[in-house]
Length: 197
Ligand code: GTP
Ligand code: MG
Image (spheres, helix red, strand yellow):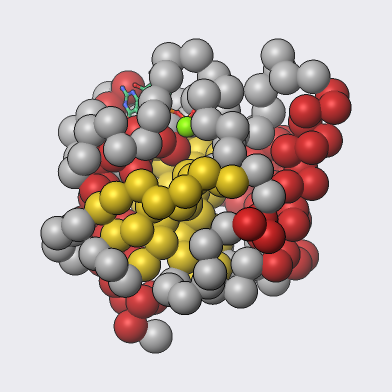
């Protein structure tokens, strides 16, 4: 897919205030600092479109972007950020759960996972919840440039092994780097395919 237009539309604290669900939508979610906003910039080829930060907790709202005037890309706040108060975390969970359960045009959730880390309970539980609720998702491993190809391969194999203990059928997955552009075509072509369905 060629991106000829990508623009920021709105930020919302409530799912029911999000734009009219007139186009297919893809949401990016994952632990704080995993690289959601960076991946959005890499995919769209627009640096600075989504705000990134070296310190976790940068994205706090439901951010809608319009791509090629025919699909929405959504940047969500990260989960698992230790410095966030219990109350804020509960609010976050309520906002995101409502969004995930009620967004009529949500085609697929991209669950971002840091390729450097072993399987973490927060991510595994989040994906299990999506499965239970019947929300379609794929896994997007990020920051592949942070270690050698051999290390990435081993980490990925370990992750998939853990997933196969939980899931009868492995969810689809992608390996990406916002630094090198790895995985860009694969993710965009996947979205293009789903848009056609
Ligand atoms: P929150 O909005 O706080 O939840 O974070 P986020 O998931 O949107 O992460 P963000 O894109 O802001 O990136 C966090 C940090 O990781 C930044 O310092 C990025 O430059 C860095 N980063 C993100 N993706 C990559 C990547 O693929 N490779 C490398 N080397 N660094 C990355
Ligand atoms: Mg962010």
